[in-house]
Image (cartoon, rainbow, N blue to C red; front, side):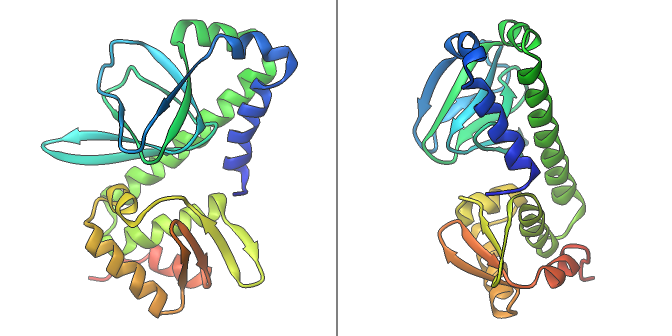
Length: 223
């Protein structure tokens, strides 16, 4: 993966591994979870800050029996347990945890760590806002196209054949993010493939063959 968002996330983990941050890293507790495990629920009793070391997590709200995905967290992303959200492992995941008051004290003592933390949180919030906007204001066709377009802009790699995208998510995961059924999302992805806009390479891997057309679909909704 490439792009400013991925670099910001990688920088946070890189900075934590530096010799000058050895003390900070030693005070973070490593926890591992299996795929589909529910790590945290609303108002978790521990007020923790956690950093994703490996894997992927989905942050979502439970509203009237429905799930509203608000963020997908990957390596280097930062989040807090003291919210109204659920945090679920989309794949086997390892996180680094620390009591919130201690973490921000430690971060405040290291300028490089504090800056990387701010950048990572800012990138994550930007992605969260885009997810919510897409979910609330767009029809299903547009939500799926917008999801792939935003992911391509943030983490895509330009190749001679098109924009390579390794999102590491199943169709079921994508359906949860865009607020639709797996069958509907699978059909829409197949339609994008038939139209020559997108090609599925492997599980979680895609090639965007026509970014311009994908953008058009992402920014228009049929009546």
